[in-house]
Image 1 (cartoon, rainbow, N blue to C red):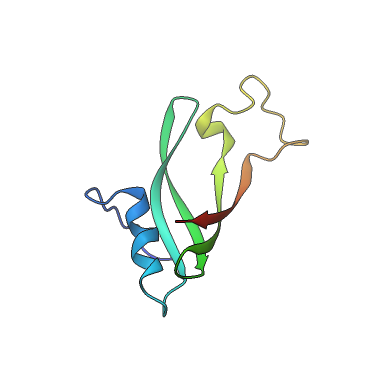
Image 2: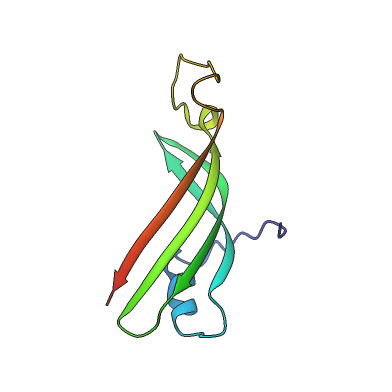
Length: 95
């Protein structure tokens, strides 16, 4: 995995917009903050952007530790729901 990069000056959409203009690059690792239930933690998002022009498809995934975000608070049994939870994102983008 890539070393953690923090780009405080960029906006979340900047990276997607930059990739739309670079046909040679369509897969990235992006370290961003995730916020859930009032808690913000750094996360590593792997994503692919396919398409150009007016439409594109964005697909990504990340894994979060649900205990870090108090998901299932009071229910720490990991036999039904794992402590680390995979999150998959799929978006159809249009200009």
